[in-house]
Length: 388
Ligand code: CAA
Figure (tube, rainbow, N blue to C red):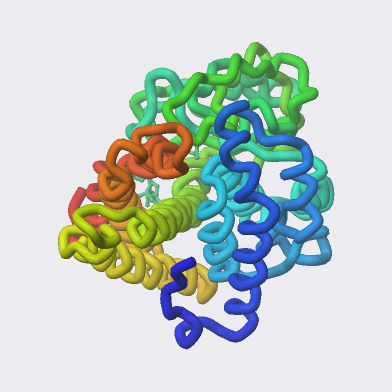
């Protein structure tokens, strides 16, 4: 397995976490990845294994049952898990970054006590519900309504492309508390909603190109009553929570892309050393050597960008641009690497018998979810040009 030389840029503790996560993922998750893809389901045993090693609550403090690690460690763990299985990787990423992340940062004491404890131990799974049928990249145009009546919020609307939809028990839902649609991102609030609340229902699992083991569904809210103590953060300031949370989530998707790229490199190295053409291993042909060299170089660059973004988050420094850059770059190179990995495998790479076929399918989503590459360009450009 190829390992970028990162040990001098992170602490010994962080490196130990990465080593442990890599060994765990290779031994416990990697052997199951193909069947997770085929069955389009992550078995309970995988969730149990992730629970045992504390990966279901990586940055949540120990007092709430989490592992109390930093964001660099979370990034490294996510690289390791995604290298083994991208469907498991995104399931874990959403649960950690997009659900526990905002509760840790914006939650009340009551919410932390009630929800973090069950999420961080992995006893319950979380989902983050921002996108809707008519609002994807333009997240601020969402229509789901939250009307306050007799001390409770009544939620009506629907959410689209919700990762963990079918696995989740706890949903972070963004809804409009000021009905005036022309306000855009203003007038949106965040809520913690339990699956058991009357009026919440989960749609069918979407059939996808890749990351098939992850669950993607619609969520329907039909006069769903949410207690007022489940308002997350300040009323009407929910869009900032959504965006701040995605800053962390995007580091997770960069980690996912890097994990898949490393897996592509692993398989390409193995195959090119074994496969002989024109009297020598194909690795001995310049055409293949250059591909492998480019893949490793770009992975190392993406890795350092991801560590930098995670480190800034740990330091409490603004990292919106750096998280977007890491995601933009990593998701772009992984899609190139998957194409190259299939090419190196030739006809074999087109067969389901070889993992690169799955990596090719899994990689595409990293350019789409948690903000498309076009949205990342927009975020980066805005911060450089200081204009909207
Ligand atoms: N952190 C905190 N606050 C932020 C912020 C950030 N990163 N980014 C923006 N804000 C604040 C702004 O400062 C602004 O505040 P004020 O009103 O006080 O000025 C407010 O939020 C509105 O911001 P913008 O004016 O920039 O909003 P916009 O409408 O122009 O949109 C956008 C910005 C970047 C395009 C945004 O809509 C966006 O990121 N879209 C993509 C959505 C997305 O990533 N969806 C992914 C869905 S989740 C998912 O994919 C999970 C999964 O399944 C794996």
